[in-house]
Length: 440
Ligand SMILES: C[S@@+](CC[C@H](N)C(=O)[O-])C[C@H]1O[C@@H](n2cnc3c(N)ncnc32)[C@H](O)[C@@H]1O
Image (cartoon, rainbow, N blue to C red; front, side):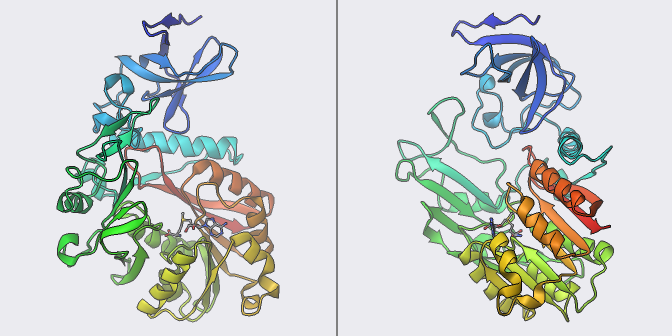
C-alpha cells in the first residue's frame, strides 16, 4: 500500500517510484493498484507527487504532478524554462512539458512513446523508430525554434500565459521557445512592455531567414496579429524552403494560418517526403501523386516539380485561404502540373471518379498525407487503399492516430515499410513521424 498523505491544503500527496513513459508528456506509476499519470517525472525516479483534483478513490486512474525528486533519472535536468515547469516550483504555464528532460532524454522519451503506440494500437511487433534531432537544436539546447508564438492578454492587458489549475494568468517577459527572429519582432513591437485589450489573443509570426536573406526586421517579413486581425507587419509572410537539390521553393502564407512551426521543420519535412517518394515509392516522372491535407502547398510544390515534373499532383485541402495561397504558390514557383481542390478529403475522394477534371486522378502512383492530430481515420484510409496506390507517405503529428491508421492500412493490404521521426518540437512531448506504407 502506498501511503497517501494529506497536505495542509487538503490535497493528497504520496512518495512513489515512476515506472515508465506514458503519453501526453506523462509517466506512469501505481497507487494501490490504480494507474497514476504523472507530469514532470521520468522512469526509475523516486519522487513525491501531488494528486490532481478532482479525484475519487474509486477512479481507475488519477493524474498527478511531481513536487519533489528524491532519486533523479540520468535524463533529469533543471527546467530550461522554469515558468513552464512544475507548479510546486513556480511553474505551471504549459507549453514545455519536457522542460525537465535533457535533449538526449527527450529523444528516448519520444522513441518509447511512438513504439508503444505502434505496439498497442498498430499491433506491430518490436517496432524500432529512430527519432532524429534537427541539428540546429543542438546549438540552442532545444530552445528558440518557434517561428509562431501566441499569448493571451491578462485582465490588465499585459502579455501573459494561463497557469494550470487556476484562472490565474502569469505575465511573461520572455518566451524561451520563440526563435531569435520572433524575439526580435517582440522587441520591435515592445510586446512585453505594452498592453492590449484584456483577454486579447496575440500572435507573432516571423519566418526564418534562409542563407542570404535579410533578417525579418530588415526585410519587413513579419506580422503581429491581435484577435486574428493584423495590427502591424504583413497579413501574408514569405517562407523560403531550401531543398536537397540546392534550389528552393518560395511560399506566401497567411500569417494567421497553418505553417510548420519549427524554424527548420518545413525544410526537414519537405526533404523527407521527397526522399521517401524517390527511394521507396518508385513513381515515374509522369506519374500521379495525391497530396492530402495539403495546406499552402509545402509538399505539393516540391513533389510536383521534383517527383512528377511530367505528371500531375492532386492537392486536397479543407481551408479555403490555404488553397488560395497554394494556388499563388504554384504560380510563384512556376508549377503548372497541380490541381488544387478546396474541400474535405473524404468527400472529395468519394466523388473523385464522378467529378469533372478529377476522374483522371483515380489511380495515383503514390499518396502523401499529412492530416491534423486526429489522423486520417478509417474512411479516408479505405479510400486510399481502394485507389490501389503502391505507396503512401504518411506525415503525422500524433503517434496514436498514426498507429490507428497504420492498423487499418495493414488490414487493407499494406505493410509498414519504413518509419522514423523528427523531434521538431523540442521541450514538448510532441513529435513528427514519417511512415511509408507499401502495398503488399
Ligand atoms: C498538419 S496540417 C498540414 C498542412 C501541410 N501539409 C503543411 O505541412 O503545411 C493539416 C491540414 O489539413 C487541413 N484539414 C484538416 N481537416 C481536413 C479535412 N477533413 N479535409 C481537408 N483538409 C483538412 C487543415 O486545414 C491543415 O491545413
